[in-house]
Image (cartoon, rainbow, N blue to C red; front, side):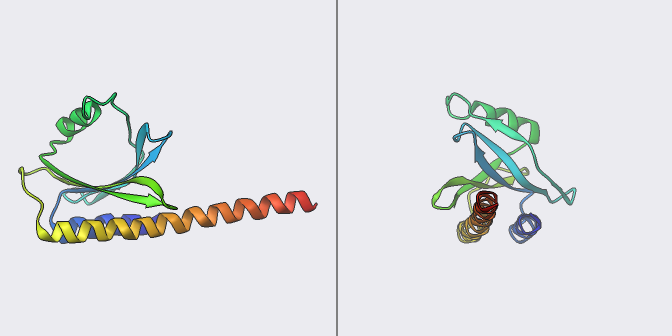
Amino acid sequence: MPILAKITQEISQVLGVERVGIWSYEDKQKAIRCIEHFERRLNRHKKGCVLEKFNDPRAREFKRYFEQLSVKSMLDVPFSILGKRGGVICIENVEEVCECTLGEQICVPSAADSISLIMSTYASQVNEYALKNKAAIIVT
């Protein structure tokens, strides 16, 4: 979705952070898939990476991710889709370990609310389209 690319890029630039990602839960929340990711230094968008659930010990899979991408600080804020847990927006800083700023504490949850609205609207439209197609098949 182009709007998600715009959101990640704007957050990165406004907050001055290196990476902003939007991750969606899949497979009954056993994995998360990156549906949009912006890297500021490279001015690059990407998506598709999947992190599988890490048999807990508190994020084994993330440890490898952090090391490979030099993540020093991270802020994750959940979002919902149609009232259910949908995923997280992830803000990553690679330069130094830092505390969340007031701007991040205000901006990121607001962005998560916007993502919830966008993703819920999209899911509703997909469901409506599927129901219309089912009804058309039954009528004919």
